[in-house]
Image (cartoon, rainbow, N blue to C red; front, side, top):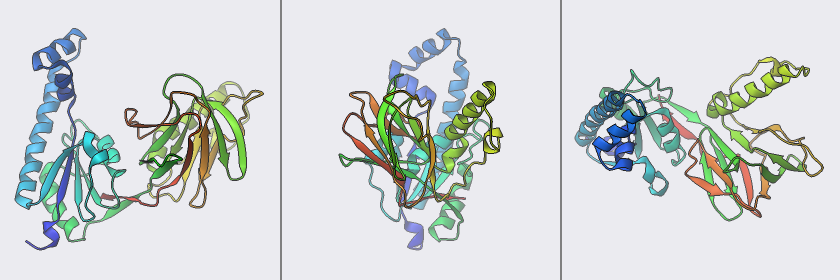
Amino acid sequence: MSASDNRKIVLVTRQTRLQALVARYQTLGQAKFYLEHLGADFSDYLREDEAYAASLRIVAETLQAWGRYQIIDRDYLANYIFAGDDIVVALGQDGLVANTLKYLNGQPLLGVNPEPRRWDGVLLPFEPAQLKSVLQGVARGNRATSRVTMAEARLSDGQVLRAVNELFIGPKTHASALYDIEFQGMREAQSSSGLIVSTGMGSTAWLKSIVTGAVGMAQAVGQPQGKEEQGDYRPLPWDADHLVFAVREPFGSRASQTTLRYGEIGASDTLTLRSRMPENGVIFSDGMEADFLQFTAGIEARVGLCATQGMLVN
């Protein structure tokens, strides 16, 4: 085996829906009772769990034959230290790939689809049986990759959070977000339901839904529309050289303004936000609400492009 083939593989896994329910209700029987009591199809949970286990066995056998490897659950990603020459494999859904990518610093990441009949897998181009040959190609540097631009929020208390799809900044509960916003020389106090900062990868998801909703509302109330507002929305490429921020439901009043509603954050730009929320202000990324930073009164967040790009293996 060559030195390149001896690079360590880190496999990131996640619980299936059934495993999460068993962990919650202690036994398989109690999990089954809970699901069937709600009228859910327990057999579908079993099929998903069995398919994931079968794929995991194939992947584990490949890694055992490879040599150096480690398996970690996604819940431990935030505390795991990746080596610079690690090759990372994510076995799960698209969300697991995105959640893993933001903890890497340029290491190649392979997305493996555990059940192609169930998951479309935009970020999961490989099946378990293909892993051996793909790993060899990555280790020898002859496998194509795609660069992925990430967003980054840096707080005044030193904490940092990255995002592969988007950052959400706003209230933890259904309440108004209060903050000061500053961008490209403009500054104002705002009250809204929060804002998102989207990457190119995220521009096909949450950002698109915000734009779609805004266009629909404008049409419903008869507001004049420009070309972009008429539906000519184009998602950004994954390696876009800028981010996009959008304020959700800005509310104008004597104490709050609505001028800074949407903008592009380039390499030389910083979006600065200062919280005026005494409690429940948060920042989370990529839909992981449980993994958040506190954004309460007095904390400043500086948001911009992450210096590191993610690397997805094609």
